[in-house]
Amino acid sequence: MSSNPNKPVAIVTAAGRGMGAAIARELHSRGYRLALMSPSGSAEALAKELGGFGLSGSVASLEDLQRLVDGTVKAFGRVDAVVNHTGHPPKGDLLDIADESWLLGNDMMVLSVQRMARLVTPLMLQQGKGAFVNITTFAAFEPSPKFPVSCVYRAAVGAFTKLYADRYAAHNIRMNALLPGYIDSLAHKPDIAEGIPMARLGKVEEIAKTAAFLLSDDAGYITGQNIRVDGGITRHV
Image (cartoon, one colour):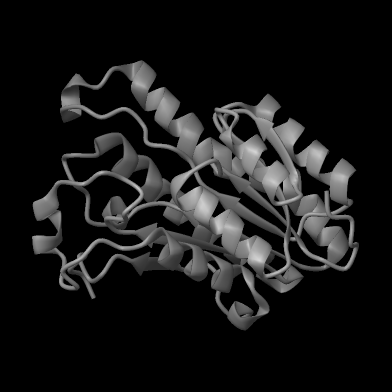
């Protein structure tokens, strides 16, 4: 595990594969020390490969988030950046979705972001600096009937992002949301690209580089934004 105290520390959730793993690798390439979590052991394995701290846990569990933050501080002594990423919530027809699925979606997508902010903000206030990136979806503000739970709660994350950003901007702590379009981390139908102006899926590496930029000092005057990385698929200006 890297112990250079001059390197920044980033927490990435749902980091075992796909966009989360790509973000972890990109941040590692930029000199970050990493703390990674996912429900399976894949984040632990990636953390070991990258010389970081890893554990298995769910973003829907306050206990697991607490273990993640506590373990990060024990390993590295600080937290400079957080990438709130999570898996996909239950799907279904709008009125057929059970209460349990809505409650799980709230825990996964909204409370996970609020809880992580609650756990990490005191550390960032002490350090005088920090940055969050919340991975949501292009459909957060153009809702799709394909993803009802995701659309509802990821739109809520957009609102929380703005509220938090305004509250802590003067403390040099920033929060932005990154809204991916159709990305090659999933097996999309071959014709999906026909509805995308760029006529292709996005690459996980493109999401990773955007997330890394938003966490960096190069984005030091960007906060409270919902930034679409979607190949132009959303229509509103």
